[in-house]
Length: 285
Image 1 (cartoon, rainbow, N blue to C red):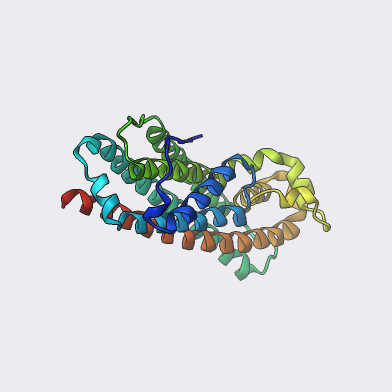
Image 2 (image 1 turned 120 degrees about the vertical axis):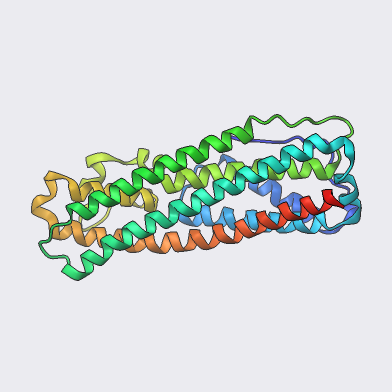
């Protein structure tokens, strides 16, 4: 997991009143690194707080003193590292957006079939297989994105005594972004949540009329993966109607989750673009 705490001195409070608010939010996001919560609400909250943090960064970059410090020649290598990291993060953001879109499209196709057949005795195997194949493609893309994040983590930040607070601040923000993106990618892959309750233990519980508490601990993507495997399980042949109804509920929940995450990710992407453009403009002036 990425963790960057390189700033030896805080940005002087006298520069701008937004700085204490920035530091407070940065500390809160750092603290969230230690939490194991992986619900759609917690992930969306982190994306929203990260967006607020980037808004502070944009405002701080607009200050003349910070622009002057950032453009100093002795920080050229550090700035290049930050810009390289920002470009990789944008690539990962695009991968995450594509993963959400691909998952949404495949599940919407399955929902369409379920609705047309009204949950009766229908043949769903080909569409379910297509959804499972799509999820494998998504997870492969997520693995690639995680490798890109690790590349940023391993990019050692060359800090010296002359490193300005604004440069250190940007590096710390990038570290927080990496941690949140790691959590986000793990969430949409369903990897962590599935380990809490998987296999037939999930299938047995999910078929009960009174759903067990453990089911709620699964995130929406892990629940969908388990449900798709449930529909393909030979053990469920006599319970197709109930399994299909449950699948429909799971897919509807997932669609709402994806929509919420897409909105948060798109907004975050726009902020990342704006900051990168601001940095490039500062360097070119």
